[in-house]
Image 1 (tube, one colour):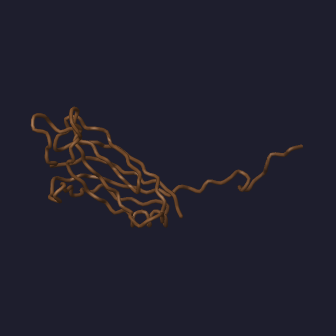
Image 2: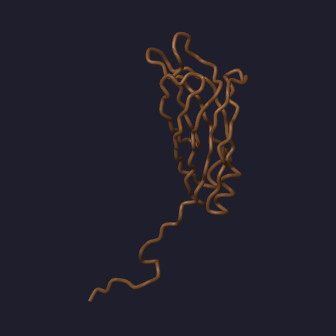
Image 3: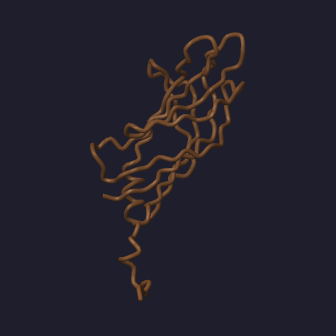
Length: 153
């Protein structure tokens, strides 16, 4: 089993359905991968076209337990006096990215626009995301590496 890091470049969203009536939406993204969850910053007043330009990192094992190699992104609207509103979501399947990264040492999905769908599965905008996977170099114990050792005379 290989271990590495999947870095998600969360760029921006466009054409999101605004959930707030009297003010502009304050969107953020919940990113989930195999039980790990991360949260982007809130773009206060970002409205329907927020920009994040953030890097979010997940620790990844490949092949790992289960076969669900997917990254879920849920766009939420931050509310102060009530529960946050669900705006939409998208899923990015990363199995091929991870397999290539394990084979070559690293791999990349260049920034791409993904469709965002609402709770009723209708189109409600797009989100631009890039992903890279980097294989973690194996850690060696100093005793196992060739070369001279400290003398105890």
